[in-house]
Amino acid sequence: MADKAIISERKFQKLVEKRANRLLRVAHYLTLEQSIQRVMARSVLGELLSQSTQVEELLDAYGARGNHRWLMYRSIIAAIKQFSEVGYELLHIQHAFSSYRLLPIRHDFLEATSQTADFTDRVLLRAAKEITDYSSQLGLSIPSEKIGVEEYSEELPPGRLPQDGGLSIGDSAHKTVILLATSFLNLAAESRALQPDSSSNQKITTESEQDCLTEERFRRLELRFHNLQSLYDTYVLGTETEKLDENLPVLRGHISVIFHLLRTATGFAHYYERHLKIQCGNEREHQEPLVKADMLLSVLRGYSVSYASEYLVSAQHLCQEMLKRYAEIGEIEAPVPPYRGFHVRPSTLISKLVIHYGSEVRMELQGQHYDAGSALELFRANEMINAQKRRSLANKILCLKLIPPTTSAEDIKQIVRRIVVKLAEQGALIMYEQPLSLSDEPVDKDGTITEQVVCEINRLLLTGKIDVDSGLRAKFIGDKRVLADIQLLAESGYGEDSFGNNIALPEKLKYLRH
Image 1: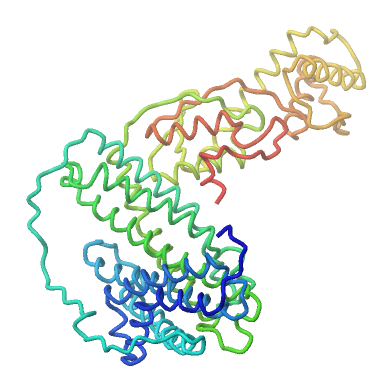
Image 2: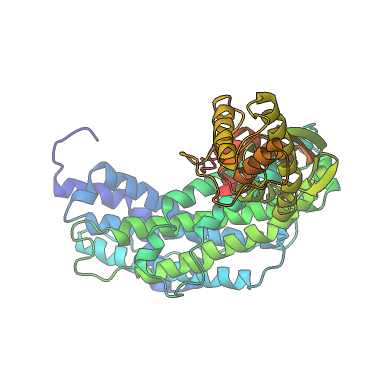
């Protein structure tokens, strides 16, 4: 509100009393029942969420967070809003579980969901008592009419409606499936960073959780999984493609359960950061918090993050298999890494890229075939690359015509220096060491002078003091999506500059950083 006038306490009290009437009615009902079973109904949670949202908006509009008298009241309202929203998500997971077709995991997810729901309900029962007591202290009247049990009961008979609405018509389902599976794999790679190191001390400390279990990170991931779910429902749900591929509803179930788990994580993290990590004024000066920080973080990590991670991992293989079935095979040509060839970084990045998609990609080089998903296989290609470099270097040396017919061993070293500098000036090779230091080993005098010079320069190549671009191009054959990322990686120098220093990868390849 832009108005800076001070509202009278009496007028504001009456305003809140009117707005909070329905919320206090439900809260009073819960304090009388004191039953978790009463809380875990959509009608109760929905009413708590709706009414607490409206009361919170009113309190914020009048600056209650900065008012000594109303600060605590606003904090309790926020707790009711946050935990009723999380409770609603948990209830949704319980009701939808059978339709998700989730792949088996190590732990009992339904039991863990039930335990987490009990935890949130206990917080809500305590918050209901606190808001009732605190409202009385503030002079607000508490609705006295008794609520009948049937008003908030929810009986759900088994069964579903006949699915006789016909199939959806669309020609983009096939492409959407590829996009969904690819995006899921990318999100799975990105989400690994959210899980704290399980090898560390199992006791959760506030400090260790702050870096990775943040509301901002959960909310960002939540939005992206929600987008995947919407994409599926718009272009795949009810299509012929979905009917023919039994794995598609399984993928939809995993996307959905992870999305809802992330929503619970966002809710828990929000309450921790806003009301436990940072406390305003005397928010908890004389009162125990509704929930202890270490307990909340334990539930956040042990349930929301842990099970989201488990279902991410379990569905990765499913996505990789789907991509194989829907793959469009193609081929590209890309330059061999110009300096050092397929050494550690380029080979590792290519193999990680291929493994990420779970596809089979072959690399062809000079008639030889290599498995692009194996860094060791790509290393093996360096034998051919280095042989080509030596041949190319020998031809360049001969073209310079800087080698006299006769000379001494000392003169050969000077000739080597002149040739290396000349080739570097022409851009034909790169010098990693300046000034160039030659080996103290005696020059082999068995060959011709030209052979001796070439031998010395090859020794510099072998020891990594110089390098030359082989000019070779490799052919990659496999799934077009994987090839597109390999092409992008090649255009980015395979993650290195000309001196072998690591450089940032494009945003599209950020999954390779994890």
